Image (cartoon, rainbow, N blue to C red; front, side):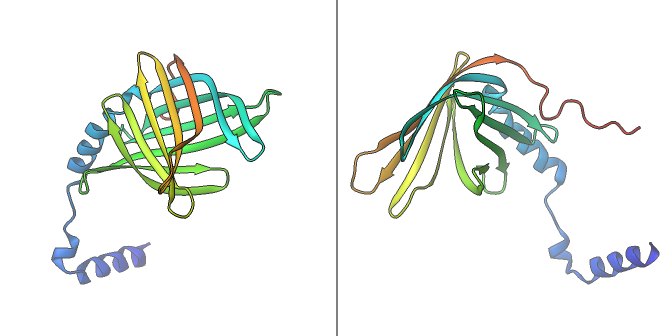
Length: 189
């Protein structure tokens, strides 16, 4: 143990003083909490309908979202789950919304269907917009409006030189609160 402590002290001493300076963690976290608080409209448990266009045609599902703050309100976690007509889970996604005070920018880290990526998130007073690459000279833009207990989100595939094509839509109602993900942590003893 002494060896590890001595090695850490030696490495810290060899780093130039300018490189050792970091932003004050308390100030960074305060800025993150303030920014993530603006996403409180998303918090809770949501249920409704959604559809997406697949190569085989339109696919309708019952869709749910559960959303809550984490790490003292410095992050927002989101789980989306869609149920097929037979009750099986047809889609499951996980997202992490974060805020970088140095860049003054939100981002969404998304995990879905075996894929993951980091995408800029633009927060609006009544929702958000984010987009993912959608092929050569194309993107898919998701736009959500959350107001009066209703979450309406659409996804449009936008190809350069063509009209946008709607490929996704969900309409959810807030059905309650949740202690997820911060609730019920593992106790010390």
